[in-house]
Image (cartoon, rainbow, N blue to C red):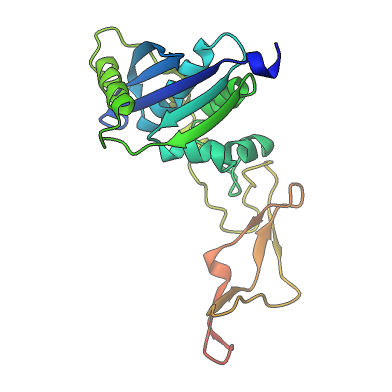
Length: 235
């Protein structure tokens, strides 16, 4: 298939949960050359962000041939996650954040990146509940999913609930605490020079350091307050 043969498709999406977390649903519109199809699904227990992600994933996975797809979503979480490169960075870091905890919704972000690779996809943010015809229609479809009698289980969210401690930030406070990335005890490191940014009235006397993955953890016990002359005021 040549570049000129690639179909151009618009994908409109919306998702939500009531309450959040709670029963959820999403709605999707696929439009090609004036023709369109609508989709909706409901989930027993999920979150707003997972439904926003699932809406886009579902729509892209419905497209069976390589296409130029323009996605319209009112979710900054989804649009910025792709357009700002956050998801690609998370994938590169094996879905582990700088502080060592896992990225929320990593299962859906991975799935979204995988399906994006099959197409040429651009994302556009639209303001929700602002009269955008397709967005309002997707909101209606999402509510149909929320209120449907036959909802399905969000297995990824259930897995998250079973392993929630790995997603929540775990404080590393003292030497010997285990690094969240590689399960190795951290050690104390003291900078050779005091590092103070302009107009900053504090510095860290030391930090906790993982000797394997090189992750640094800044701790409150090491924070020192400076007076106006740059002398240590509190320890």
